[in-house]
Length: 226
Image (cartoon, rainbow, N blue to C red; front, side, top):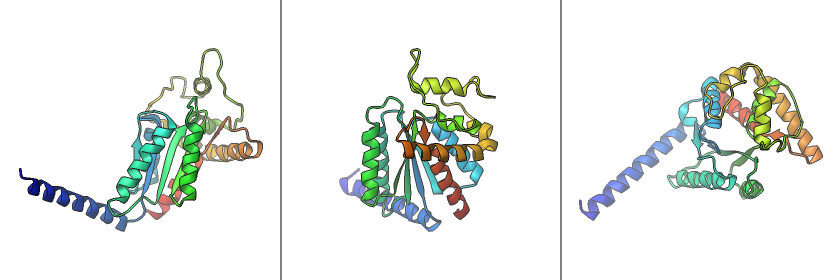
């Protein structure tokens, strides 16, 4: 194949990609959600998205490989810029990651804050110590700090408590159907998460806290427009 043919094929493919992007834009706003985990968070959020009746093209959920928060942020930035190069960009990008024992947590949060100040539609959806705190809040409010104990990390300690709850005795990372098990308790979790975050902001003690409820609220609002 000659170089001219290859050039024209690439140009045609890029034009087709841009046309698809613009066609999607014509249908309404679009949201990108970048997750630290490959299974737990994407599975939960995909089930939530389906339950809310959000059209597939409106929300893209991009799993990562469970690596550090700074790499999650870098991955999301790359996806955002790649989309923008097609002639458009996402209306909002949510970065879902935990603090746990990650040494780059604060750096990642600060980078997103700087991007937001610069006008980027970026949102940090953090959980301290981990996403499972959001799941635990479906059973009621708790602000008990979770720390390393008995050779367990803070996240492992929290998961041990989650396993004491009904239907969660065998809970494991990447388990399917979690959203369905907790759906009826969602209002409890929303209220508890908001209270916990307000308390963390007031006292400066972020362990435990989560912003997952802010993402859920955003998706609920989006569902009303899609």
